[in-house]
Image (tube, rainbow, N blue to C red):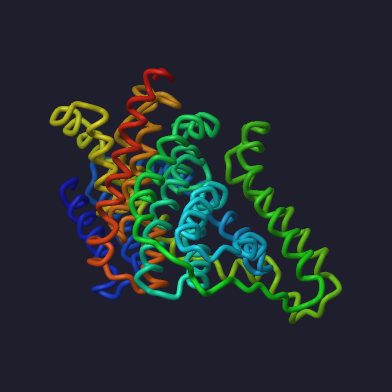
Length: 426
């Protein structure tokens, strides 16, 4: 039974990895894989249906908290975008020096992804880069840095990357601690490849950003929704600290407040115009397939956890490799080939909080490695896949031009974290 579940899981994984060649959305493969794993478990398992259903519902509670958080965060970001709120940031970039533009875009991506998330930031910065760089080769190099910076920026923030969010919601890390411990390694992970790639940029870029307001009052609404939306996202860790409620409650609180705000500021508009700026419209635009993908893959991983296979894998890694640092760095490199969401979900199932308590060195290093390791391949992270789709970047081009840079940054940040740990303690 365990072998059959593992075979189905591997086949499902291959379908997810080969999403583009086989032309089947990875969300469909993930959902089917999750359902089949649990179906095999209940039909061929040695436990009662009542026990297995109880196990599934217990896992579903944790999974739902992640999905509701993502749903709320993505809706808030879409609402900001609908009001052209991000123009308030991009419109302030006026320099035409290519090297300066590279640094501005990279640094902006790094910090913006910590406040929003790496996927959304990658999409926003890809759109911005198109306006700034006319030569395709230079634009793609910048976008390579956008992917690295988005993943590194998301790794040190509890709301910046879905894997860090999973660890935060699961109780493996706390928001303040992860920021303190990972911000420097993440900065190094970004700055090292940025410094190397900077030598490829010389001269001025003719193009400049032009921000236009399409109606009266747009400027006020744009700024209001931008600051209110970012404020709602930043307030989530504060809300959790004050109330001790799960983060998804904080994000829903922010979404509810923003919903009321948009209803008030657009109440005098015609229904057709008002609809474009509503939360209802934003909900229609969010990346629902990505949410369903997370649902399917997390359900599938939970089946491996309930059947005890993840514990066996943990024991095998411990017996074969032994060294925690090597194990975690290996998982990070694997996250470039295998999606980091199931990798972190697997690690959460493999290693118990009784062995590695909250804010333990292991969980923090796992957040860094699985958050940044995916930059090594363009298909290794959600940010990379999004940029790849938007700019039609070839896998082999990224491998030749960016992979080595990403790995240099990844290991530089990892070694810095290892060196820093004695000063912080376990």
